Image (tube, rainbow, N blue to C red; front, top):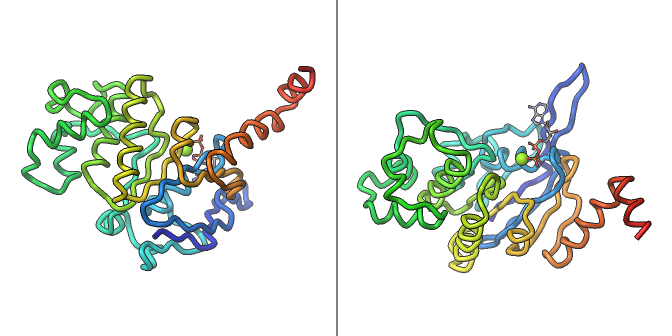
Length: 246
Ligand SMILES: Nc1ncnc2c1ncn2[C@@H]1O[C@H](COP(=O)(O)OP(=O)(O)OP(=O)(O)O)[C@@H](O)[C@H]1O
Ligand SMILES: [Mg+2]
């Protein structure tokens, strides 16, 4: 179980303090799939990075399976089973896809067919990619999918995916959605997916709308999806006028 208690993150800007995350408290039960959604700049990535240990909160605590992990670094959290896939994944010159999957799995002798399985689950053909370097020669969508495959290979207990759909074509997106659905049905992992996609939002046990560094709304997809649409219209005077004219 993941517990966030009064988590805040502030930065100093123009002599003042800017709150990026503001007093967030949240519990994510084991085996659940939670989707964070909400407007650009709302604080989703910062929240995910705080859970992974990439951002150090200025106040509050993070508990993972009852253990206070607030002061632990990324490596220690990874050892406890927490993994995070970047919104914009880094590239690793000199490292092949096979190396990356092997490192992620922690199994020095990860067999080729296991690598193939992970790549297939993100819609990639292993034969084309295993020996490719994870460098600038890969397209944005390819790097994104390879990173997701490496998180699958890590087999963590808490998997956080930051906009897994970003830059991914429709065919691969369908495959990826199926993979999330299967992982969730298998029940072994707790998943937090940051997403703007209705198809992914509808897989969630709980949807949380993050805005202005706060948890704005939470509920089931059926409760939250209509709300997102009305908020979108409500937030923009032009759209609001158009909606009223109809
Ligand atoms: N170190 C920092 N210094 C100043 N501002 C920051 C810093 N880190 C994050 N921010 C700001 O905090 C806000 C939240 O950023 P974050 O990346 O968490 O948003 P997000 O919800 O993931 O947005 P998106 O949907 O665009 O990915 C943004 O306005 C961002 O510019
Ligand atoms: Mg983000």
